[in-house]
Length: 305
Image: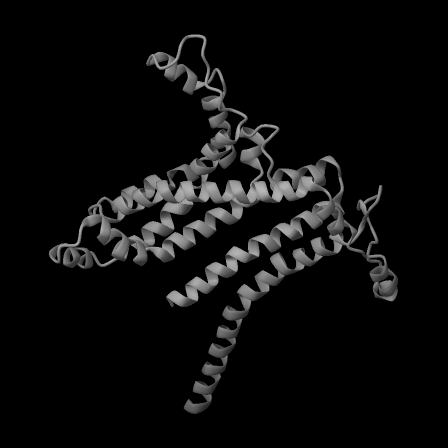
Protein backbone atom coordinates (compact mmCIF):
# COMPACT_ATOMS: atom_id res chain seq x y z
CA UNK A 1 0.00 0.00 0.00
CA UNK A 2 2.84 2.37 0.88
CA UNK A 3 4.53 1.73 -2.47
CA UNK A 4 1.27 2.35 -4.34
CA UNK A 5 0.71 5.62 -2.49
CA UNK A 6 4.28 6.69 -3.20
CA UNK A 7 3.91 5.86 -6.87
CA UNK A 8 0.63 7.76 -7.05
CA UNK A 9 2.22 10.72 -5.36
CA UNK A 10 5.09 10.73 -7.85
CA UNK A 11 2.59 10.54 -10.71
CA UNK A 12 0.74 13.58 -9.45
CA UNK A 13 4.03 15.38 -8.92
CA UNK A 14 5.11 14.51 -12.46
CA UNK A 15 1.87 15.89 -13.89
CA UNK A 16 2.34 19.03 -11.85
CA UNK A 17 5.85 19.53 -13.20
CA UNK A 18 4.63 18.97 -16.76
CA UNK A 19 1.89 21.56 -16.22
CA UNK A 20 4.34 24.11 -14.77
CA UNK A 21 6.74 23.62 -17.69
CA UNK A 22 3.99 23.60 -20.34
CA UNK A 23 2.20 26.71 -19.07
CA UNK A 24 4.81 29.26 -20.29
CA UNK A 25 4.93 27.56 -23.69
CA UNK A 26 1.16 27.61 -23.92
CA UNK A 27 1.16 31.30 -23.03
CA UNK A 28 3.82 31.91 -25.72
CA UNK A 29 1.82 30.06 -28.35
CA UNK A 30 -1.47 31.81 -27.54
CA UNK A 31 -0.19 35.38 -27.18
CA UNK A 32 2.85 35.48 -29.48
CA UNK A 33 3.01 32.69 -32.04
CA UNK A 34 -0.70 32.70 -32.96
CA UNK A 35 -0.97 36.52 -33.28
CA UNK A 36 2.26 36.56 -35.29
CA UNK A 37 0.88 34.07 -37.82
CA UNK A 38 -2.33 36.11 -38.08
CA UNK A 39 -0.32 39.27 -38.80
CA UNK A 40 1.90 37.35 -41.22
CA UNK A 41 -1.17 36.07 -43.08
CA UNK A 42 -2.61 39.59 -43.32
CA UNK A 43 0.75 40.84 -44.65
CA UNK A 44 0.35 38.43 -47.59
CA UNK A 45 -3.14 39.71 -48.38
CA UNK A 46 -4.44 42.57 -50.52
CA UNK A 47 -6.16 45.74 -49.35
CA UNK A 48 -9.93 45.80 -49.78
CA UNK A 49 -12.74 48.21 -48.95
CA UNK A 50 -14.53 45.77 -46.69
CA UNK A 51 -14.64 44.39 -43.16
CA UNK A 52 -12.02 43.17 -42.53
CA UNK A 53 -10.15 45.52 -44.91
CA UNK A 54 -8.17 42.81 -46.71
CA UNK A 55 -8.63 39.75 -48.90
CA UNK A 56 -8.64 36.79 -48.99
CA UNK A 57 -10.49 35.83 -45.81
CA UNK A 58 -10.23 32.25 -44.57
CA UNK A 59 -13.67 30.68 -45.09
CA UNK A 60 -12.98 27.05 -44.21
CA UNK A 61 -10.68 24.17 -44.93
CA UNK A 62 -12.64 23.22 -48.04
CA UNK A 63 -11.43 26.31 -49.89
CA UNK A 64 -7.91 26.30 -48.49
CA UNK A 65 -6.27 25.86 -51.90
CA UNK A 66 -8.02 28.95 -53.32
CA UNK A 67 -7.18 30.83 -50.13
CA UNK A 68 -3.44 30.07 -50.37
CA UNK A 69 -3.32 30.83 -54.11
CA UNK A 70 -4.48 34.42 -53.47
CA UNK A 71 -1.66 35.18 -51.04
CA UNK A 72 1.39 37.06 -52.36
CA UNK A 73 4.45 39.02 -51.21
CA UNK A 74 3.74 42.27 -53.05
CA UNK A 75 3.56 44.22 -49.77
CA UNK A 76 7.12 43.20 -48.91
CA UNK A 77 8.26 44.15 -52.41
CA UNK A 78 6.58 47.54 -51.98
CA UNK A 79 8.48 48.12 -48.71
CA UNK A 80 11.79 47.69 -50.53
CA UNK A 81 10.72 49.96 -53.39
CA UNK A 82 9.51 52.87 -51.24
CA UNK A 83 12.43 54.66 -49.52
CA UNK A 84 10.10 56.00 -46.82
CA UNK A 85 9.96 52.68 -44.99
CA UNK A 86 13.69 52.01 -45.31
CA UNK A 87 14.38 55.46 -43.86
CA UNK A 88 11.86 54.83 -41.07
CA UNK A 89 13.57 51.55 -40.11
CA UNK A 90 17.04 53.10 -40.20
CA UNK A 91 15.89 56.18 -38.29
CA UNK A 92 14.25 54.02 -35.62
CA UNK A 93 17.41 51.93 -35.20
CA UNK A 94 19.53 55.09 -35.03
CA UNK A 95 17.32 56.75 -32.41
CA UNK A 96 17.11 53.51 -30.41
CA UNK A 97 20.90 53.02 -30.50
CA UNK A 98 21.67 56.61 -29.46
CA UNK A 99 19.00 56.52 -26.74
CA UNK A 100 20.33 53.22 -25.39
CA UNK A 101 23.86 54.64 -25.25
CA UNK A 102 22.61 57.74 -23.41
CA UNK A 103 20.66 55.54 -21.01
CA UNK A 104 23.77 53.47 -20.32
CA UNK A 105 25.94 56.55 -19.74
CA UNK A 106 23.38 58.04 -17.33
CA UNK A 107 22.11 54.84 -15.73
CA UNK A 108 25.47 53.19 -14.98
CA UNK A 109 26.69 55.83 -12.50
CA UNK A 110 23.29 55.82 -10.81
CA UNK A 111 23.28 52.02 -10.48
CA UNK A 112 26.90 52.02 -9.28
CA UNK A 113 26.15 54.62 -6.62
CA UNK A 114 23.12 52.60 -5.48
CA UNK A 115 25.16 49.38 -5.28
CA UNK A 116 27.89 51.05 -3.22
CA UNK A 117 25.50 52.85 -0.90
CA UNK A 118 24.82 51.65 2.61
CA UNK A 119 22.68 48.50 2.74
CA UNK A 120 20.15 50.32 4.92
CA UNK A 121 19.27 52.92 2.27
CA UNK A 122 19.40 50.71 -0.84
CA UNK A 123 15.68 49.79 -0.65
CA UNK A 124 14.85 53.50 -0.51
CA UNK A 125 17.03 54.21 -3.55
CA UNK A 126 15.39 51.38 -5.49
CA UNK A 127 11.97 52.75 -4.57
CA UNK A 128 12.98 56.19 -5.85
CA UNK A 129 14.02 54.65 -9.17
CA UNK A 130 10.68 52.87 -9.66
CA UNK A 131 8.64 55.78 -8.27
CA UNK A 132 7.84 57.19 -11.78
CA UNK A 133 6.00 53.92 -12.56
CA UNK A 134 3.33 55.01 -10.08
CA UNK A 135 2.24 57.65 -12.58
CA UNK A 136 0.74 56.95 -16.00
CA UNK A 137 3.31 56.78 -18.80
CA UNK A 138 1.15 59.00 -21.00
CA UNK A 139 0.81 61.67 -18.30
CA UNK A 140 4.59 61.71 -17.78
CA UNK A 141 5.19 62.25 -21.50
CA UNK A 142 2.53 64.97 -21.64
CA UNK A 143 4.30 66.70 -18.73
CA UNK A 144 7.40 67.11 -20.91
CA UNK A 145 5.31 69.06 -23.41
CA UNK A 146 4.69 71.69 -20.74
CA UNK A 147 8.40 71.74 -19.93
CA UNK A 148 9.90 71.81 -23.43
CA UNK A 149 7.45 73.91 -25.45
CA UNK A 150 8.73 77.39 -26.45
CA UNK A 151 6.80 79.16 -23.67
CA UNK A 152 7.16 76.27 -21.23
CA UNK A 153 8.79 75.85 -17.85
CA UNK A 154 12.32 75.44 -19.22
CA UNK A 155 12.15 78.76 -21.04
CA UNK A 156 10.71 80.50 -17.96
CA UNK A 157 13.45 79.02 -15.76
CA UNK A 158 16.28 80.11 -18.06
CA UNK A 159 14.77 83.59 -18.33
CA UNK A 160 14.43 83.79 -14.54
CA UNK A 161 18.12 82.97 -13.93
CA UNK A 162 19.25 85.38 -16.66
CA UNK A 163 20.57 82.85 -19.17
CA UNK A 164 18.01 83.96 -21.77
CA UNK A 165 16.46 87.26 -22.68
CA UNK A 166 12.78 88.04 -22.10
CA UNK A 167 12.01 87.53 -25.79
CA UNK A 168 14.10 84.37 -26.27
CA UNK A 169 12.62 80.89 -26.22
CA UNK A 170 14.00 77.36 -26.06
CA UNK A 171 13.47 75.66 -29.42
CA UNK A 172 13.56 72.01 -28.33
CA UNK A 173 9.95 70.93 -28.62
CA UNK A 174 9.07 69.02 -31.82
CA UNK A 175 12.70 68.05 -32.47
CA UNK A 176 14.74 64.87 -32.15
CA UNK A 177 16.31 66.35 -29.02
CA UNK A 178 12.91 66.38 -27.32
CA UNK A 179 12.39 62.76 -28.38
CA UNK A 180 15.74 61.75 -26.84
CA UNK A 181 14.86 63.58 -23.61
CA UNK A 182 11.48 61.85 -23.38
CA UNK A 183 12.93 58.41 -24.17
CA UNK A 184 15.81 58.70 -21.69
CA UNK A 185 13.47 59.91 -18.94
CA UNK A 186 10.88 57.21 -19.59
CA UNK A 187 13.23 54.24 -19.99
CA UNK A 188 15.88 55.10 -17.38
CA UNK A 189 14.49 52.73 -14.70
CA UNK A 190 14.63 49.85 -17.19
CA UNK A 191 18.37 50.47 -17.54
CA UNK A 192 19.17 51.19 -13.89
CA UNK A 193 17.49 48.14 -12.34
CA UNK A 194 19.34 45.41 -14.33
CA UNK A 195 22.62 47.27 -13.81
CA UNK A 196 21.96 47.56 -10.08
CA UNK A 197 21.10 43.85 -9.85
CA UNK A 198 24.46 42.96 -11.43
CA UNK A 199 26.55 45.49 -9.49
CA UNK A 200 24.92 44.76 -6.13
CA UNK A 201 26.10 41.12 -6.29
CA UNK A 202 29.72 42.09 -7.03
CA UNK A 203 32.38 41.12 -4.46
CA UNK A 204 33.90 44.44 -3.33
CA UNK A 205 36.93 42.67 -1.89
CA UNK A 206 38.17 42.37 -5.47
CA UNK A 207 38.44 46.15 -5.66
CA UNK A 208 40.18 46.26 -2.27
CA UNK A 209 42.70 43.70 -3.49
CA UNK A 210 43.30 45.67 -6.68
CA UNK A 211 43.81 48.84 -4.63
CA UNK A 212 46.30 47.06 -2.34
CA UNK A 213 48.25 45.93 -5.41
CA UNK A 214 48.50 49.52 -6.65
CA UNK A 215 45.84 49.41 -9.37
CA UNK A 216 44.43 52.90 -10.11
CA UNK A 217 40.65 53.26 -9.53
CA UNK A 218 39.88 53.90 -13.20
CA UNK A 219 41.85 50.85 -14.33
CA UNK A 220 40.19 48.76 -11.60
CA UNK A 221 36.81 49.85 -12.91
CA UNK A 222 37.54 48.74 -16.48
CA UNK A 223 39.32 45.52 -15.45
CA UNK A 224 37.01 44.39 -12.63
CA UNK A 225 33.76 46.33 -12.16
CA UNK A 226 32.65 46.71 -15.78
CA UNK A 227 33.36 43.10 -16.88
CA UNK A 228 31.46 41.74 -13.87
CA UNK A 229 28.52 44.04 -14.64
CA UNK A 230 28.41 43.08 -18.31
CA UNK A 231 25.30 40.83 -17.93
CA UNK A 232 23.44 43.82 -16.48
CA UNK A 233 24.70 46.08 -19.27
CA UNK A 234 23.48 43.65 -21.94
CA UNK A 235 20.14 43.02 -20.20
CA UNK A 236 19.45 46.73 -19.66
CA UNK A 237 20.47 47.60 -23.22
CA UNK A 238 18.21 44.94 -24.74
CA UNK A 239 15.28 45.82 -22.48
CA UNK A 240 15.57 49.46 -23.63
CA UNK A 241 16.66 49.08 -27.26
CA UNK A 242 13.89 46.68 -28.32
CA UNK A 243 10.82 48.72 -27.22
CA UNK A 244 12.45 52.05 -28.17
CA UNK A 245 12.79 50.84 -31.77
CA UNK A 246 9.01 50.47 -32.04
CA UNK A 247 8.16 53.47 -29.85
CA UNK A 248 5.12 55.48 -30.96
CA UNK A 249 3.86 57.69 -28.12
CA UNK A 250 7.04 59.70 -27.43
CA UNK A 251 7.91 60.58 -31.06
CA UNK A 252 4.26 61.37 -31.75
CA UNK A 253 3.90 63.77 -28.81
CA UNK A 254 7.40 65.28 -28.59
CA UNK A 255 8.79 64.80 -32.09
CA UNK A 256 8.23 66.92 -35.15
CA UNK A 257 7.36 66.22 -38.77
CA UNK A 258 10.99 65.28 -39.47
CA UNK A 259 11.06 62.70 -36.66
CA UNK A 260 10.66 59.47 -38.56
CA UNK A 261 10.17 56.25 -36.57
CA UNK A 262 8.68 52.98 -37.69
CA UNK A 263 6.15 52.89 -34.82
CA UNK A 264 4.65 56.16 -36.04
CA UNK A 265 4.64 54.89 -39.64
CA UNK A 266 2.99 51.66 -38.53
CA UNK A 267 0.20 53.54 -36.74
CA UNK A 268 -0.40 55.72 -39.81
CA UNK A 269 -0.75 52.71 -42.08
CA UNK A 270 -3.11 50.88 -39.71
CA UNK A 271 -5.40 53.73 -38.61
CA UNK A 272 -4.76 56.54 -41.09
CA UNK A 273 -4.52 54.77 -44.42
CA UNK A 274 -6.31 51.61 -43.18
CA UNK A 275 -3.86 49.56 -45.21
CA UNK A 276 -3.72 46.56 -42.89
CA UNK A 277 -1.74 44.26 -45.22
CA UNK A 278 1.06 46.81 -45.70
CA UNK A 279 1.07 47.68 -42.00
CA UNK A 280 1.29 43.99 -41.14
CA UNK A 281 4.26 43.62 -43.46
CA UNK A 282 5.92 46.56 -41.69
CA UNK A 283 5.27 44.87 -38.34
CA UNK A 284 6.70 41.53 -39.50
CA UNK A 285 9.92 43.15 -40.76
CA UNK A 286 10.21 45.09 -37.51
CA UNK A 287 9.87 41.88 -35.51
CA UNK A 288 12.58 40.22 -37.58
CA UNK A 289 14.90 43.17 -36.97
CA UNK A 290 14.30 42.93 -33.22
CA UNK A 291 14.90 39.18 -33.12
CA UNK A 292 18.58 39.79 -33.92
CA UNK A 293 19.45 41.63 -30.65
CA UNK A 294 17.37 39.10 -28.70
CA UNK A 295 19.46 36.27 -30.15
CA UNK A 296 22.65 38.16 -29.31
CA UNK A 297 21.43 38.59 -25.74
CA UNK A 298 20.56 34.90 -25.40
CA UNK A 299 23.97 33.84 -26.71
CA UNK A 300 25.67 36.18 -24.27
CA UNK A 301 23.64 34.76 -21.40
CA UNK A 302 24.69 31.23 -22.37
CA UNK A 303 28.34 32.27 -22.35
CA UNK A 304 27.96 33.83 -18.90
CA UNK A 305 26.18 30.71 -17.59
